[in-house]
Image 1 (spheres, rainbow, N blue to C red):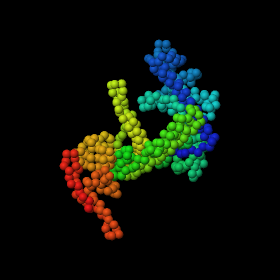
Image 2: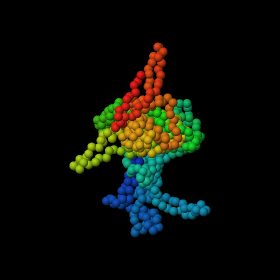
Image 3: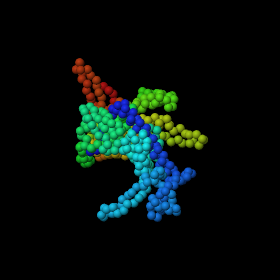
Image 4: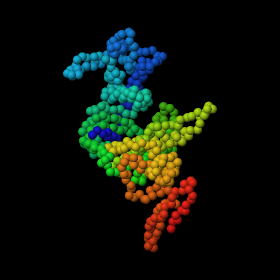
Amino acid sequence: MQVRWNFKLLPNQTQEATLEDWLVTLRKHRNYALRERTIGFETNNKDSDSAIIYAYGSYCDLDSRIEFGSGCPLTCPVLKHGVIPQDLELATKETKVKDKDTKKVVETVVKWDSASGIQMKVTTQLRSSILHFSIINSAVLQTNIARLDTAFSNFYKRRIGYPNFIRRLDSFEYKPGHVQLRHIRKNYATAYLPGIGDVKFLRSRDLTLIQDLRTCTITRKGGNWYISMLVNIADVLPAIKSLEECKSVVGIDVGINKLIALSDGSFQENKRISTNKRTARRMAMRQRAISRKLKGSKNKIKAVKKLAKQQHKLAQRRDGYDWQMAKVVVDTADVVARENLNIPNMVKRAKPSHDGKGGYKRNNAAQKTGLNKVILDASWGDIFDKIAWLALKAGKPVVEVPAKYTSQECPKCGHIDKKNRKGEKFLCVVCHHVDHADTKASRLIGRKVGLVFLKNKLTLPADCGKVTPSSYQSIVVETGNHAFGNHRHVRETPTVGYLGDTAEPLKESRRL
């Protein structure tokens, strides 16, 4: 099984200074490579006022589809990526053509190399001429170009936008087989990083389970250094059970007031890691301190590091709490049912609308901004990912249910109406069913899977009593004193129906 493990690095002062220099050089290297591709994209691949860059061998014959060496003046001078090195031999590559039947090489064709291939060759030459490039491992430099190539691939597939120039780079990656583990001790171990040396890291997992060490990523977060290892271990993931083999299901409904509402009537608290009053005030003070400092000064750098450290602490606290919540959900039943939420659309800003008089109508943009911050702080997507991983390790299926009308549908009569819900209280306008809105939604989500959801044995008969009027409770509790032999007991009283808008008032049951 292939998993990714994260460890905290403990570099000394010399190693930390080397890591800082590497990140600066890699950032400049990526921006320079991006500039080359941007020039080709804006001149050769688009209509632009700037002159088109011509190069020998960059013509494309429309009839034979040959991209290199045609030299026909009647063909178009279109270059795919616009990366043209000074030495044109670096811009070509030899491709061997094999026979489909015999699998033997028939001929060798010379073609124009890709942008990443050309820039990797140029980078290899830079290592022999520039000192800053010579001290960096060659595989790290090639991976830096490969990351940029992945960003362009995602852009052409319309997954993300056009790659941007970055002001700060916080990670680099080693290829498989370069990093080696050494000196494994009880509490720490040592990893050999080519170009840096042996670096200690805290041992928080059993490293003897590693069979093969693949890619390793070095990351800087909040003033600390971390290493992320992609390793192969001997463990095997169990087969996921089918729904026919499962006996119970737990439905979950995520929210803001209650982070997770489970179908057994229990709740998981939303601690609001970064949006509570104390933390939000502290983060605002840190941000104002940065804005007051002189641009480029050492004090501003110190203020930025202070803010980054605080943000990193909050992110770690949120990540740990999400793991705890995910474990509680997965251990509850055999199947986990959740809503299929489109979170990116839920946190979009309020669209402005013109009032026809040169201004804009009120759209409650400030309230929507505050709601978006709380939703992002709740990290629903991260909780779903952690639930999926823990369920995969336990062999339990996770079923995604459409989220439409789960908070408005009545579980008793099936009536759907916005008026049914008011905050945490659910009151059906047709059958007068009363329930806790979040618990009702979680049970409705679990019911759509087709299995029976578990009920918490410790839950009172009226687990929604917090939002149910006291005059409509069917359970009456009499207080007592054990010293005088008067014990506390519970006895039932007649249930009083819900009073609708048009119904006549009924008599309330009196407590004895």
